[in-house]
Image (cartoon, rainbow, N blue to C red; front, side, top):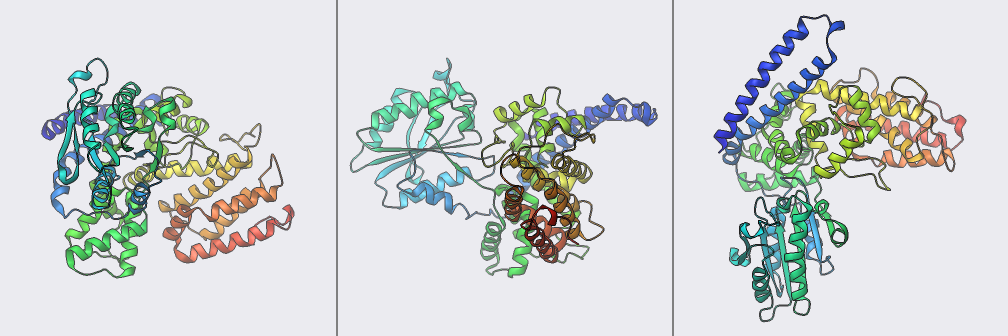
Length: 557
C-alpha cells in the first residue's frame, strides 16, 4: 500500500516540477516589471505544493525506519489528565480532543489499566470507532465494534446503534457487585458528520443511559481529533472538554531522563538535560509524538550528543535541526493536515506564524500574496473553524482567532526549512500590529478609529513578539533589549482608552507581557539571560514612569 502511495506521489511531484520549469522559463524571459502577477502567484503555489509532496514522500520512506530506529519512549506527563479522570467528581461525559500524536489512545489505555488495578467496582470497556462509520441507511452494513475489557478480553462486539449490542453491554455492566460502567470511545473523528454523531449518540450512548439509569453509574470518555464540533445543540452542552496540552521543557526532561536510565542505566547531567530538552521543545512545538521520535533517535546513540553551540558538529545546528524537522516534524504535520482541505492547509501553515488572527489579518496576508485564497477572509475563517478543528474563536480572555494546537509545530517546520518565508511573515506581522497600535494602516493611511482597548494591548504585545521572533532568523545588529524597550515605549505612548484611564491600559499591557512565557523564552534563546535581565530592567523603569503620568512615559534613556 505504501509503495503504491509513494509511486502516485512521485508521479504528481514530477508533473509539478515540469510545470515549475515552464513557469520559471516564462518569468525569466520577461523583465521584472512585465512579469505577470498571476504567474508569480502560480510559482509560489507550485513551490509550496512541491514541498508538501516531498514531505509526504519522506513520511512514507521514514515511517518504518522510525519504528525500527530506537526503543519506544513512553511519556509520563499525562498525570494531570489521569488524575482528573480518576476523580469521583469527574463529569459524566468527557471529551479528549487533540491532533494525531498527542497520546489520546495511550491515555485511554492507561486510564483503563488504572481503573482495573484500583478498587473500582465497575466495568471499564475500551472501543474504537470503525473506519468510515456511516450511521445512515447503510448502518446495517457497518463493521462491528469490539469492546475490550480487562486483560484485553473482548467483552462485547456488534454494530454501533444496534439494540442487541446495547442489551449485551447492559447485561455485562449489571453483573454481580458492579456499581458502574465506564466506556472509552477512541477515534471519534471516524464519525465525520453531525448526522453520524447524532446516530451514535442516540442509538448507543443515550440508549445505554436509559437502560442503566437504575442499575449502575455510567461515565463515557470520547477521544479523537475532532469530537465536540461534530455534535450539535443539547448534546454539546453535556460534554466536558479535557484539553491535552503540548509538552513543555520539564516534561521533555523527564522523558529524556527516563530513556537514559532505561537505556544506559545512568542519569544525564542537569545542564545537558535542560539544554537538550529546551531545543527539542523548540523543534517540536511541544508535540508529544514528535518529541518521542527525537528522543528515541538520541537514545539510540546513548545521548552522546555534541552540545557545544560553537562546535561544527553541534547537535542542534541549523542543518541538524532542519534534518530532524524533515524526519519527525514533516510526517506529523502531514498526518495532522491529512483531513484538512489543501487550500486551507496551506493557509494554516502561513497563519501558524501568528499567535492570533482575524479577518482583517487574513485580508492583509492575501493582499501581500502571503496566503492564497480565492474566497473572502471571512469564508476562510469559516472553513478553518468548521473543517479543521484546529482553531479556536475569540473569547472574553482572547480577542482573536488562534491555533493553539499545531501552531508551534507548523511554525517550527517553516522556520527551519523555509526561513526566508518565515522571516517575511513575522516581519510583516510586526509592522502590521505596530501600525494598528499607532493608528496607521498598512499603506500608511490613518485608521478611521483606534482599536478597542483589549485589541490595542494584544496588538502591542504581538508587535513586540514578532519583532523579537524575527531575530531568530535575522540576528539583531545592535542592543536588542534597548531596541525592544524603545518599541515598547513607543507603543505604550499611543494607547488610547475607550473606557477608564490610560494608566489602567498600560498596567494590563505590562502584566500580560510579563506573563508571556513564549516571548521570554525566545528572548532567552536569542540573547541569553543577560538580554532577559536587561529588558526586564527597561520594563521596570517604563512601568514606574507610566505611573507618574503620561508626560513621564517617553523612552528609556
